[in-house]
Structure formats: structure tokens, C-alpha cells
Amino acid sequence: MALTRPQVADFVDHTILKPDATTSDVARHVEEAARLRVYAVCISPNFLPVLVPAPVKVATVCGFPSGAHSPAVKAAEAAHAESHGADEVDMVVNLGWARSGRYEDIQDEISTVRNAAPKALLKVIIESALLSDEQIVAVCEAAERARADYVKTSTGFHPAGGASTDAVALMARTVGGRLGVKASGGIRDTATATAMIAAGATRLGMSGTASVLAGFPEA
Image (cartoon, rainbow, N blue to C red; front, side, top):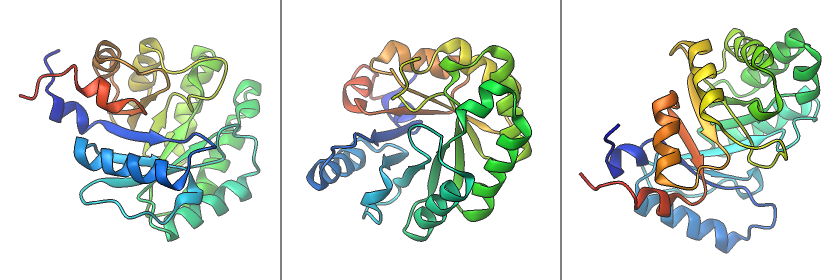
């Protein structure tokens, strides 16, 4: 797959979610996002609102990183994010429910968040490395029924691991182009980014964006 640097940059959510990130760290990250011409910058909700040069979008997270928050708390986070300038919200599903087969509860939870932030693009983080193929499919189906816009592999914080091409391909087959697929967690080089896109990822979440993009030709 022959990809150029601008093409790949348009897939990227340039991410800084370290809990000890400072205001200065985030400001530098936003400046880098603008310089690299990525699609979006993803920051923790406590940094909202943030001024980001157009056309870069602002993404944030809710229920992060454990997913164990109540649906009402996740909805409140999402509503706050939308009202404070977030274009996109990446929510973590209740992972215990996913492992227990409580897919209707997951659908209801996602719907609650969707209704709380109706204008934001909603991505649903499923921690694919933690789940069986059957569970991945069922959670993706629940996300689609709940009117999410994307399904996303990982937070990047769970010990089970980050994105894999197998999980991305399975998620892409499940949503069939009706939802986007975001690969996140462990994408640190050009080869991995290329493999994720080839597997079906339509967005990439990564923090080391500059070094990854440097491996692609400008044109």
C-alpha cells in the first residue's frame, strides 16, 4: 500500500492523554498537530476548551481509561465536552459488561452518551485485546445499534495490549463501512500504521505522530 505523508496525516488523532500532562505539554502538542496537519488532536477533558487551528478537530475522552464509570457519569462527561468545544468524544464501554455478555446494557450505555452529546462524533473504545472475537463482534454491533460513529480498539492504557491488525480487520468486517474503525495503542512506526490502514482502520490514534509520519514520502 503506497501512502503519502499527507494521506496518513489525515487518518491521525494526535493524542496526549497522560494523566500528568501539563498545560505546556498540551500547548506543544496542539502546535505539533497543526504543523503535521493531522485530522484531530485528542486531549483529556480537563484541558477543554482548547484553541486549535482549523481545520484540526478537537477530540476528548469519557469514561477513560477504565470504562467502569456509570452511564450517567459518562453522559455528563460527554455533554460537558461537547459544550466546551469538543468535536469528537471517545468513550470507553463497560468492559465487565462486555466480558459478561451484557450487550443490551452496553447498547443502552452508548445510547445514553449519544443522546447527551448529539452533535459530537462518537467513538466507542472496546479494548479489543481483552475480548474474544465473539465479544468484539457483539460490542461492535451494539455500538452500531446505539448510533455510534466509530468503534475503536483500545485506550492504550490496558495491560491486555493495544491494537492488532486481526482485531481491526474483524471490527471493519463487522461494521461494514457503516461506522469508522479507529486503531489505537501501540502504533509507533510506519509499518504498523500502514498495516492498520490496510486492515481497515479509518482513523489512527497515536502520540508519536511525527516519527511515524516521517517514514512516509511527502508525495
